[in-house]
Amino acid sequence: MSKSRRARNRIAQTTAFWLFRFATYAILAAATYIFLDIGIKGSRTLFNTQGPFINVPFFTQGPQTLFVFEYEGKKYTLSDREFRAWKAQHPVEVEATSVAYSAGGVWPCIVGTGLLVVGSMIFALAVGICSAIYLNEYSQNTRSIRLIRIAILNLAGVPSIVFGLFGFGLFVIFFHWNVSLLAGWFTLGLMILPAIITGSEESLRAVPNGLREGSLALGATKWQTIRKNVLPYAIPGILTSSILGIGRVAGETAPIMFTAAYALRDEMPWQVQHWTDFVFQGVMALPYHIYVVSSKIPQNEYTERMQYGAACILLLLVFAIALASIVLRERTRRRLSW
Amino acid sequence: MVVMEKEEIPHPAPPLKLQKPPEPEPRQPDMISVEDVDFSYSAHQVLYDVNLEIPSRAVTAFIGPSGCGKTTLLRCFNRMNDLIDGARITSGSIELDGYNINAPDVDVVDLRRRVGMVFQKSNPVPRSIYENVAYGLRVLGATKKSAINEAVEKSLRAAALWDEVKDRLDSSAYGLSGGQQQRLCIARALAVEPEVVLMDEPCSALDPIATAKVEELIYQLRENFTIVIVTHNMQQAGRCSNYTAFFYLGRLIEFGSTSKIFSNPSERKTEDYITGRFG
Ligand SMILES: Nc1ncnc2c1ncn2[C@@H]1O[C@H](COP(=O)(O)OP(=O)(O)OP(=O)(O)O)[C@@H](O)[C@H]1O
Ligand SMILES: [Mg+2]
Image 1 (cartoon, rainbow over the protein chains, first blue to last red):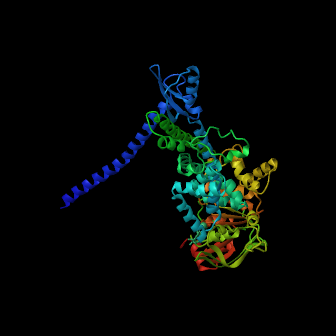
Image 2 (image 1 turned 120 degrees about the vertical axis):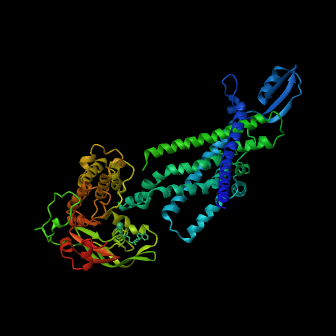
Image 3 (image 1 turned 45 degrees about the horizontal axis):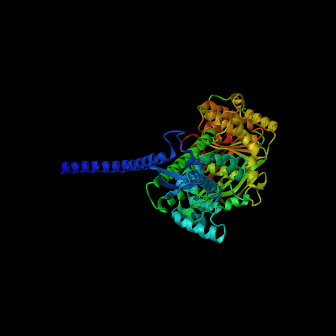
């Protein structure tokens, strides 16, 4: 009786162990597959086997149409610009197949995503840190404050497409900002605001109370205490929590597809007539570009290049920004550690 | 003439090189007067009907078993309890130099500048030694470098720390020993020139040598400041205070000159506590 129970226990034990182990390793396998797939296929676009080894046009040009044709038994794949130059030299009629977006590069998308990330993070951090300070340092635990906390919690769970529609309705239509950087900044910023507030509040809470009391007891005002004795020590934690926010802002398509992103735009963001137009222009953005080239154009063997190239760049960009904020955090932490 | 017989009390700390003042000292005018104070944390009443007159330019010690409300009363004097949700004085009043500190028109920031505090757990900020002391001056609006330098040196000297740190003012305060950190906190409190200094078990984390230094310091500070010190160490109260208040279960049981409380207490409970029969 007890022997069989022991055996049963052992079986349950082993099963549980393998189940958990399998689940953990499955995550690793999936992650490896995704990164390898995008990494390998993407680097075919990003790098060359000869020359400067880096596919410079991919980083410096906008998307162009790809022309594929045969001439005197040779197969040509030329971008829009190259094709026109070729035709100037060869005054003949050729039957060329055109594939939209599949030549050129993603430079305007990189710039657009960069602008969207910077603007929306500035907005989200400014508002988020202020409300975290209010909630954690000033407010008492009243009913309305509890209500606000619940609202923030719920806001974190709202799907990004809903934020997109909200931004479209409010900023694009109602404020007449049209499809613009400004509308994108506010939409993306609002989307990550709950995460920023929660993260900032946690970092503020982690600052020992003794530092606050020590400062107040010296006759410092509440604001002096927060500014000099609380905030500096919470900043590293706030930066850490905002790294996740940066990843989301850079990668989300839904919030910007109605508010800030153009499928194709020939001018770069700084080519505006008046500087006030800067914030009222739409931009190209990497995630939206990936969406367009993978689902809005007919697929063939020439389209994959752009899809994987753009995806790979997006990943690299997010890594780079995350790395930068980690470095920044370590710097501040080393300067002010307790 | 020394009334208190020191020999009866075993010394954990090395004997102090300070002369006991001639006793009884003339009692100075009252600095803080506590009248019929009841205090509650939310629904939990902690102080009952406390009446106390704390004389200026003297050291007053609060003693009593753990949880009897010493810290609570101390934190009432600079309104540190304002920071705790639901904590309040339910009746009675506390006056500093004749002014009710809980009156609506009192500026708390100003009050806390006049009533400094040293916490039980030393809490320097993670910056340089110099910045720790200069912080209080800066928040008061001092900007002149030379004036700040002077004040920093003066307060570090007053806290008997100057000689140990004068060559490393720019290194982190966290590199100091626990006793040095506590004296740094005292220096920081003195730098803003308060009238009253509240000390909540300032020596509880210190070794006997550091304790002796802090005690000597407290005793000297009495000449310029009004000092209230909470302690669990009977010898410490005996050595460095002029007056002693004994609390028990939220009530003030007895208050008087230290020599009287320690040699000839009028309450049975006080005697039991001091001789270590309970608590
Ligand atoms: N923030 C608080 N909220 C609620 N109750 C508290 C709080 N702080 C202290 N108390 C309660 O008030 C009573 C008195 O506490 P207090 O800290 O004043 O005691 P104490 O005499 O300083 O004790 P000790 O010698 O251990 O420091 C205790 O019963 C304690 O549980
Ligand atoms: Mg206490």
